[in-house]
Amino acid sequence: MPHIIVEYAGHLDETHCMNTICKTLFDAAAASGVFPDISAIKVRALPCPFSLIGTEPQSFAHATIRLLAGREDAVKADLTRCILTALDQALPDVGSLTVDIKDIDTATYAKRTL
Image (cartoon, rainbow, N blue to C red; front, side, top):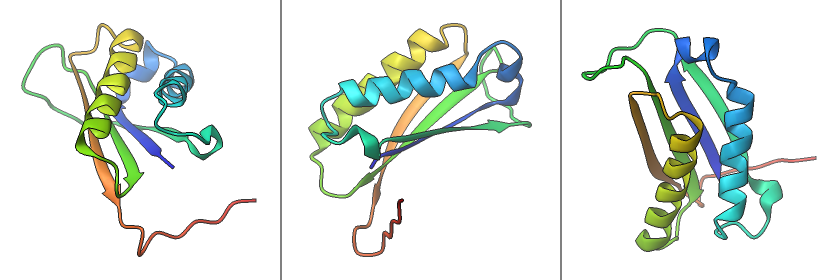
C-alpha cells in the first residue's frame, strides 16, 4: 500500500509527461519513510477530459492516497504535504493542486499479487 491516484485536467497530457509525474510521486512516497516496503506503492494517473474549476488557469491535478486504516493523523498530514510538494514541483504552472487521503477498510480489502 498505498495507491496514489492522480486525476488531472486531460489537456495537461499535451504539455506534461504523466509517466514522469507518476515516477516523481512514487519517489516522493518512497522517500517519505511511511512505507517500509516500496514494492507496495502504486501510482496511476487518470485524465479527466471534461472539467471546470472556479479559478484560472483552468487546470488541476488531484491526488487521492488510499491507505490501509490505522495511521495517525500527523503521519497522514505529513504524507499529503510530501505528495503536494512533489506535485507542485512537477506541475508548477497548474492552477489547482490538491491531495487527500482515504482509509481502506482492512476488514474488506483484498489483494493478490504475483
